[in-house]
Length: 290
Image 1 (cartoon, rainbow, N blue to C red):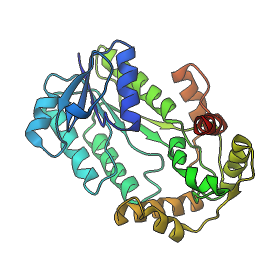
Image 2 (cartoon, helix red, strand yellow):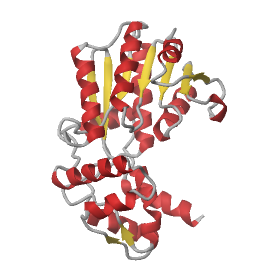
Image 3 (tube, rainbow, N blue to C red):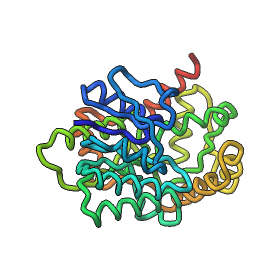
């Protein structure tokens, strides 16, 4: 019985690999360059690329459960669909797929719409999968440090409200679902889980949290998504910067709100409270000061 983690070298994937290894699971971690990885003892690193069919056939051979996390790339949908088809060919009947919350609502945002297509494949082919739909990651806001040093929280999240999630909570939920499917005597029914944080956050409330965490006034930078796109182009390709701008515009018009019962369900899975944005900001600020 082997769990293959696709997306193992990213922020969430690394935590999933570590969490599975800590639970004593047999873990294979897919990587383009195994020499550049650093995983816990006992983890087997498997060389492969999602668009290299033969390498993926080899990586999926003998796997019982698949964790599929695709990076945001122009060919993300192709990567996901190819991988899921190859997994079916390999007889894998236990899958956890990392999607995104409101993929069905953010229909003009490329990386949301792409994940919704993958969800439809899982549904139509009746793949025995858990679809995890996380909200925006709190951890992304660590990149706000330069703006915060100038007294501004610059992510244009708006005022509707985002239930941002800590990636440690997301990884722990993924580990729990992977082990639940892996250890079941037969493939389990398909289900979807929204993975959210405990708070509805706005630009103003986030700025207030950072003011407390940093001990000085932080202002919300406002809702100018065009300026956000231009700023992102300094360190991301233009297509991605525009994708993120479209996402921010939907933050402002739709938000990211959990369904009734989502928080209680997650806390039952985890056996503990969800981490708050305030706890994340306090911890991050302390790390910066250190």
